[in-house]
Amino acid sequence: METLTNLDIAYLRPLLKSRTDDSHKGQYGHLLLVSGCQTMPGAAVLATGAALHSGCGLVTLHSTAYAVQAAVSTFPSAMLSLDPEACFSRIPEGLMRFGAIAVGPGLGLSETTANAFEKLLARAQEEDIPMVLDADALGLLSQNPKLLDQIPAGSVMTPHEGELMRLVSWDSPEAKEEAVFALCRRTGCVLVSKGFHTEIYTPSGEKFVNSTGNPGLAKGGSGDVLTGLLGGLIARGYTAIEAAALAVWIHGYAGDALTERCTAEAYSSRDLVDALYLGFKALQA
Image (cartoon, rainbow, N blue to C red):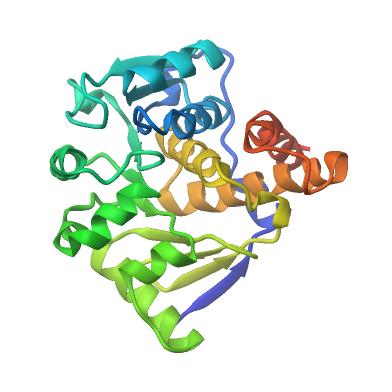
């Protein structure tokens, strides 16, 4: 039986984790971002920035030379793992040190990347590391649906409408919900269906509807920011459902704040990274 929850401050505030005075960065999780390529480095930069604003202790970006150079100049607290090719071609060493992996923004769909992505899925499942799967990672899954069965437990998929239509098909709103819930049950994933009033679906039949966000978020890079934020929250120790709920609300709240300050037309996805703190502050007040 489906249950429906509207995401608001009253629901989300009790989910927030606190930080203890006597603590260190190693206690707050380590996120691996696999993002970007030589022709799309910006996605990696935006995802990295959002992850660093999520509260997790450490963020490592694995990407190509252009992306890691851009990331370190913009967000110097990120750690870097250089891929030797012009696209994602190999898995970083020491995968077990990461509490979560976010993969997909700006990755590309080359055969080299497809092969590396398949290996990353297998290793993450073997090491039981939850993943956030977005953008080109979803494209690679739609090209090779058997990989859906290799997604680690506790992971999150974040498709927009077009990406979702490549993963499942439907001919009515009711059929859409049924197909999405079936995909969640098959994969064990939480699914974030991005759009106006973003919806979150879970394998157990729960559905959450977000209450924040506006058309100003309909710009390139906005989804990359959500991916980094969501991955950082999972690495921080939130469950997939908690992280998805917090991420979409905070992301939308930041967009609402920027719309009020700058109008929906005039803010960028880079501005969104710097406004994420406003969502956290609203929940902590």
